[in-house]
Length: 326
Image (cartoon, rainbow, N blue to C red):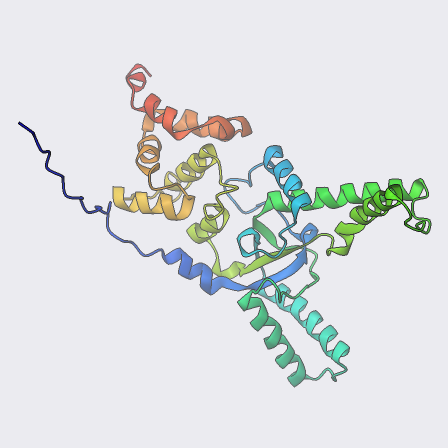
């Protein structure tokens, strides 16, 4: 007698929690001024106004970026752009300098009307942010924009250029700057290609990179944290330890503690801190644990702790009987 197994009907996917609007994306959109090519050396990666300083440079990430540069540098790609906050007036001063240069290049008299038109044209291109149509600006103020996302790209680009300059100096000291010989054989060809490769970085705008600029007066609190979270960039996410430190510092701030429901906390951790949906339950269990909070905050305040702290094993520890022993 044959037995037939009844096929189960495919179950519909059940959504976990209600759909929530991410208002901080709207706020960032309103604060966005435009994208420009700028010398990354004028960007300040040190967050003097932040409760938690910017993470230290990870040599592994930076060396990986340096290696990727040899295959092709992505200065203007949308996914790889740096993000910075600045005073709107300082940026508009830089735009005005560029507008004056453009009018002079076109042979147009610098009048107020012409300046307004040229400025609007530059801002229109910057808002659009097309990789093939970005304007290059020079920063006029002493204090540079605050670099909120992209410090590893900045460090890698500066390192790559510095190494290229060292190679160039070595070449000059050995007399390689003399007129190149006629290419007659393979050796001459290799010699020429080596020289071209040394100078390639300088021909490609040196230290310039595409940077998205946001009005610092319109970006603060959770919106600024979201900009700095790197959650959008999966190749360079913040470590679990840094995410934990950011979360407990904001939630349990003695001056203005947050009293959030479970659903509100889940949304906040995903939208602001950048914790993935699958990892959120574990993260919430650890963050809400009162017994370990002080010791874990001290641990994740160090570079070692941020590197080695992980949600999965820490959840097992915080949910164990260790808290009763403590």
